[in-house]
Length: 107
Image (cartoon, rainbow, N blue to C red; front, side, top):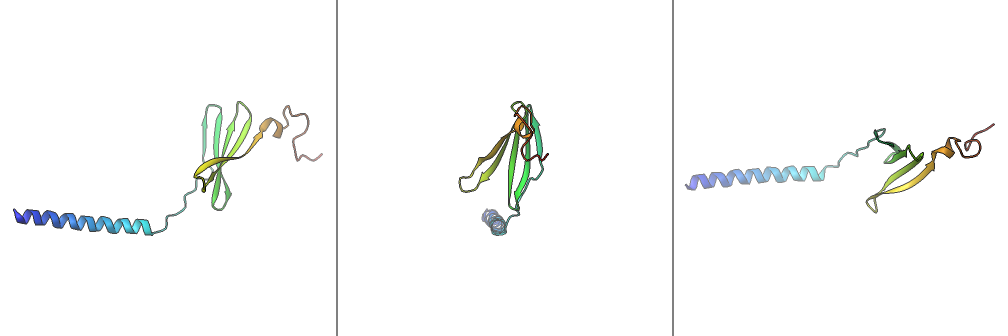
């Protein structure tokens, strides 16, 4: 009976040591940065696209096709949430119903 208890304690101790060592290795090694550049999805009137802003940050662009609006969201690491960076009226950008030529157009 004592031999079975000693064997169980030995196996559990070795398993705990291996798991602890694996935990230390995983937490100490730097993790690679993950980016999702150029991912696209569509649902109903919404089109969602990711795009690279700088070498270490990305933006999420959400297009509302029904309202012809484009919204750009970025992740604020200090607040740990997505924030609205900018939005545009696509009718005005493409010159539909905006009363004239699109901005930055040269004649």
